[in-house]
Amino acid sequence: MTLPASMRHVDHGAGGPPSVLAIRTGPLPELRDGEVLVRVAWAGVNRPDVIQREGRYPPPPDASPLLGLEVSGEIVAIGAGVEQWKIGDLVCALCNGGGYAEYVAVPAGQVLPVPRGFSLLQAAALPETFFTVWTNVFERGRLAAGETLLVHGGSSGIGLAAIQLAKARGARVFTTVGNAAKAQACRDAGADLAIDYRQQDFVAEVAAATGKRGVDVILDMVGGDYIGRNLRCLAIDGRLVQIAFLKGPKVEVDWTPLMVRRLTYTGSTLRPRSAADKTRLAQDLLREAWPLLEAGRVLPRIHREFDLEQAAEAHALMESSEHIGKIMLRVAA
Image (cartoon, rainbow, N blue to C red; front, side):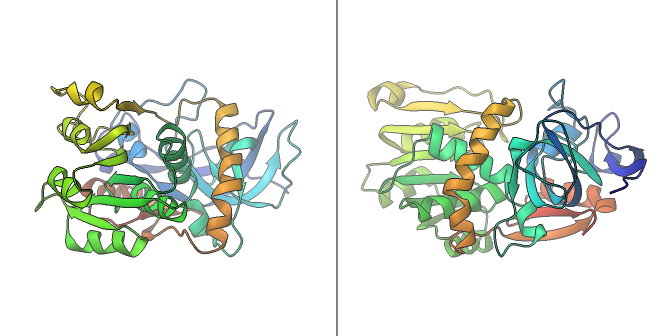
């Protein structure tokens, strides 16, 4: 296959509001040993992309400076040492950046097959979301069948994936949302209880729903004053897993419940993790989550699709938090 000398990509310049995003033309990424080159069909839009655009989430030194952490498409070139993939394979991939482009180079271990029965659009909605949910809810949070999970931001792509995966693996799931439509979307995804945080106190609602026992695991992307309130929601030996701080990382907290109820407070970010770690996560997903996807027990919800040239509009929608599910960029679909 003859590759072009240049490609279109989204550039965020020195950073700023969504309006800084613009289409530029530049060289294709250099393919390193152990990588594959993917001709991108679709790219997912994620909150870390917004934070990077704002200048608050710089990429690792060896990563692409371009935005974009998940894609689907066709493998068009293979680097030295790659044996598990071939040119022409249709895949989805967790990128180390560079997904908002016509071509992206990805470590081969971070590439996964398109689940049977899935379109490339659906497949592109999986990697960043499912890697994040798996490592935080099931590894760090150690959620087990019969336990109860509380998911904040349940109508987000991550939230809906967490709800479905937890239910499919035998857990009870509560979630917080901002309006009735989002509550219904979460219930449709399997949530046992959807709490409107604008109208209800989630601490009181959790206490009432559990007979004051509390939940076993909380997945939180809010932070701020939610941290102390989360501690009050946890059962004995409960686990609070932090994946973002939309309300800020600095807050005064009464940590007494941490000791009294033997709680664990942990968290992680995905992007800085090693290629070996991400490869391991990909294999876990292929074994544990892909069968659920192919059986139709877990499905991504696509809120809206934009052309690559409309990346600014996609980011503005992400910042509004009005979406339910995933926001996607059409690159070469």
